[in-house]
Length: 164
Image (cartoon, rainbow, N blue to C red; front, side, top):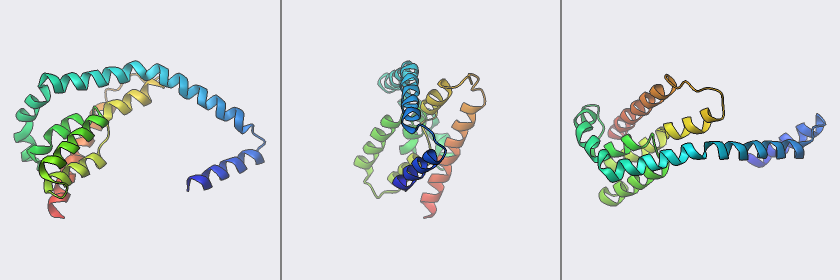
């Protein structure tokens, strides 16, 4: 599909007499500027996640919130994943790998973790990347809605894994 899309774009651009190479270079310049402008935000998120894990705050929050997550149908073993997924993708994959190593890849816990990974997003990273490139600075509704959607996705993920 991707080669077909590229060919379609090139044919469309040539029909409209657009300078495709110049447009591509301008877009690449914009992407480079965006990368430089969001770099400090990404570093701040990475450092924050590392500090959360090293300090033991994630373990404390996991223990604190386990009863509520269990009530909602989320296994205690994936609580840390649910808590850290909105912050970090690579950290989430590390937690997923730990779950695989401890419970096996075909266990109920591992299936829940996999579906949670597939049905959620790194909310704060995405907000950083997309909103830093725009003039939108008030995220008072976007972040809570995205976090709620991630929690609902985790609940439904575990429910579906239990049913199937």
